[in-house]
Image 1 (cartoon, helix red, strand yellow):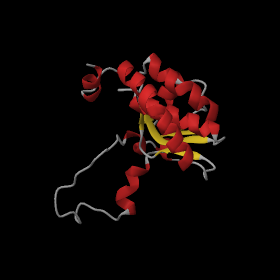
Image 2 (cartoon, rainbow, N blue to C red):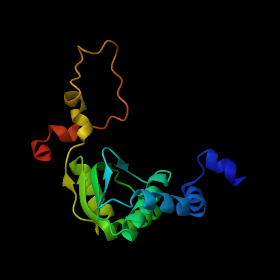
Image 3 (cartoon, rainbow, N blue to C red):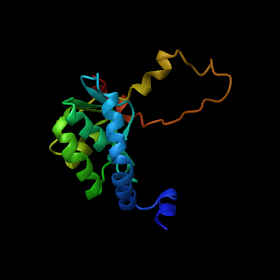
Image 4 (cartoon, rainbow, N blue to C red):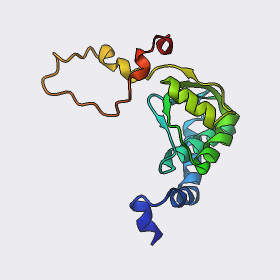
Length: 168
């Protein structure tokens, strides 16, 4: 039964078809209404651009289509990107985003290279390290202030922060 496979993860193709048939039209309408007063759309803040499961490309594609209908420029900010993409993942993101994408800022050199190879029609990615790397400074956190062992959720690699060029 297909519904069970969707709940258990299913296949990317099955999830893609289900999204397009069941959720896509309602998401377009909801997001379009929420963007009614916007002048630009910024996507990011630690997102990892990948197509495992197809859910992220489907949502980004839907956002890009909504932005295009509203004539909004789009920017990807402080994102990472995986190297290998499926053909479906590329198709879902390339055309909708290439129409509205004005800036791409990634958190490391490898992500910039991955996006350039995968999406050559997009603007060239520039490096802007993930702002989560400075959360401790902003919130004045230190190991001494923590009463229990620190827990990190959604931590990304900080290799790019050690690169002086990447931080400039």
